[in-house]
Picture (tube, rainbow, N blue to C red):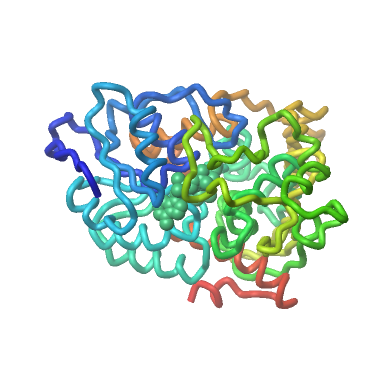
Length: 454
Ligand SMILES: NC(=O)c1ccc[n+]([C@@H]2O[C@H](COP(=O)([O-])OP(=O)(O)OC[C@H]3O[C@@H](n4cnc5c(N)ncnc54)[C@H](O)[C@@H]3O)[C@@H](O)[C@H]2O)c1
């Protein structure tokens, strides 16, 4: 590393906890680094990176950023860390141990691509440094098992940012289930739709390769799978799934025929054409792609790396349907597709004494669909009751500010009672369920979660 600023001694800045960000990603910068340095806001939450206006600079200090792309990390420090803030050191992955030794973080925030989380988490645990890991905790069940074992042997802890537990609607459902509103929950039916804008965007980023993301049944579905398990308060045991890749990749029915270069493909690509002028998809500019706050991705997306939705390297599913069994006897039917005309979900949870139903939906242009936000309790022998849910502000339906408070300040009474913060075991179960889905779809057999987490 170069120009390491001398670390302020522990306590020099009051009781603030010292954090190192691993991965100066869109998510890492918008949702963790900026709120920590007290420079949040300015980004539309609809970007999906959870930017909000909260400020945790009184309780935490960002002391280092580690990224494979030094130019990007340095651009973050130069342009987004305010003048007068204590120095934020920049490191590259080879200098991880040096960073832990020199900057003495109390915790690392792991927000790099999914396949890189595992080794960072293990190194931090080995050094006795707490971990806040972005979801998915890791990209494979085998790594997940290793992290759970390493945490058990360490003095440090791992928290996983399963923020999909936090929206008011999802907390209300958890509360209704805990109060016995539908008796004993028997079955969760969750059909999740990712729209043509958001869904396609995964196939133009690192997420499109299994080796980097574990596939979308891990990268994205861990949100949904963790939520179902948390609602049920039960661990998944067995998965059967079918699915495939039918929207994107070389055999896509949408691939423009008879064209060669990436620019020609883009010009006739229906996904691309639907987003023209919105800035959603990268256009060829002759320079490296940039992310939020105009930070360059010289290493991850160099100017020479052209991507289209139909490239050969795309090797993950873009739709699946699955059946999941849970300890205690409940079941779930979970389906997701990544090329839908709208984004959101239809949910029914049935229990021995009634059901809970919810619908959330918006267009790719962020317009709410009629009925969106509806939450209804249907007791078996009584009239249905609409359930009011307060409208929240802040990233991801108000989830991120609450989650940050739990992570940076500590859980309040409600969070503690509900078990809102996801731990390593829960992070591992979500990853294993996601892996069981793609493995089951590939192998045509049911997969035991214990088989994967062994
Ligand atoms: N909880 C949520 O709602 C949510 C939302 C978005 C993203 N995420 C998660 O956040 C993480 C980052 O996703 P993103 O889309 O913001 O990423 P990104 O593509 O914006 O950035 C990835 C960053 O990691 C760096 N990088 C690449 N390889 C690295 C390595 N080996 N070591 C260190 N840095 C490396 C890249 O240079 C880049 O700066 C992922 O784990 C993703 O799943 C979570």
